[in-house]
Image (cartoon, rainbow, N blue to C red; front, side, top):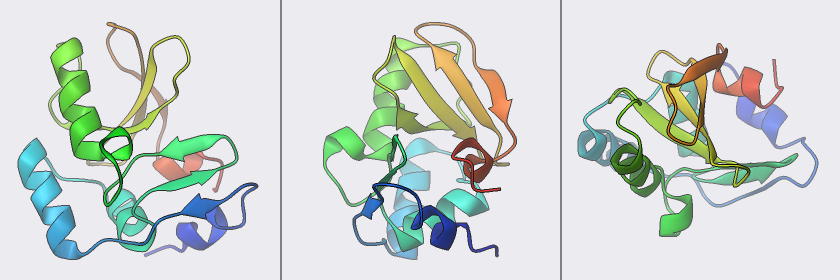
Length: 130
């Protein structure tokens, strides 16, 4: 497994909570009926939730506002055009833009009630760590 989390920790304004257990990740995947990408799991195990360089990545172990399960379920209710295998990784809070990821690692941008558009091949590419 690559060490992107260490690179993330070097970003401006980095802050995180503590990582979560494998059991917590499995429970979240079960609630969402999907599998997280390996890099997102690495992020969850190491950080739980993190902020860095203008990004506020949702995860596990935080408030509802920063919880991947809550954000994904809420967004699914508002936009039926998003495939069920995607999960929210960031709420940009700009013009209704939400950033999603697939279990294979691809990252998508969704504007309001539109279809997802692939923007990066990985979460760490999205936050400029590759």
